[in-house]
Image 1: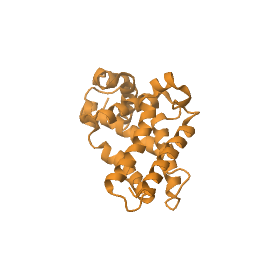
Image 2: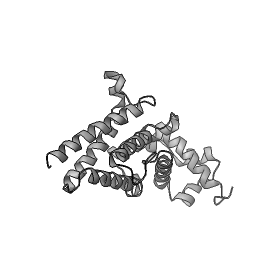
Image 3: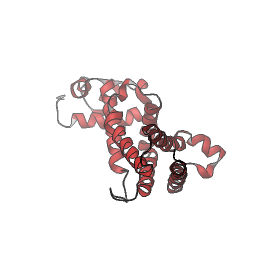
Image 4: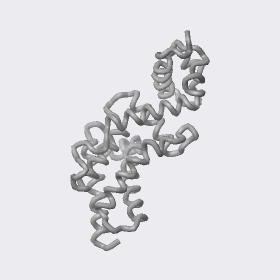
Length: 212
């Protein structure tokens, strides 16, 4: 089979997505991916430049899809009150973490979470491409809620919002054991998002009233 065949790259990416999701980076081999994709062993190097870059492509494709499926501004516009935009931001964030019940999405989400907690060289430019712009949007919302605040305070508030969202995902197992009613599930996502938003807005209001 010609390694430059137009469908080969897509098959490799689709197959690698499934295999990396099931086995992780270290336990996956290029030989296995190529065999399952029906591709020449040299095809990974030809299309992606090696296993590392194929893994990065899988993560990038997942992030792109996640932001497309679960944007941060559903139901709001640029002129909506910052409180409403913060609620929409948090809801979109949690949906990107949880997904919509697709087992493959959940596995890929775990791979991504591992990279967020301890970034490897495979994560390379993805924070700047996918995560940075959304964080900047969050900073803009916080600045509107805290006009004139020091940038240090703005970043601390934004970090608190992000941290709460990540906690409900990263500590999902222990939360299910100790306080199942607080666990992040499809049927509780809006409730969790509402709580994070209310708690965060309350803290921001206190900072605003206290003159920071």
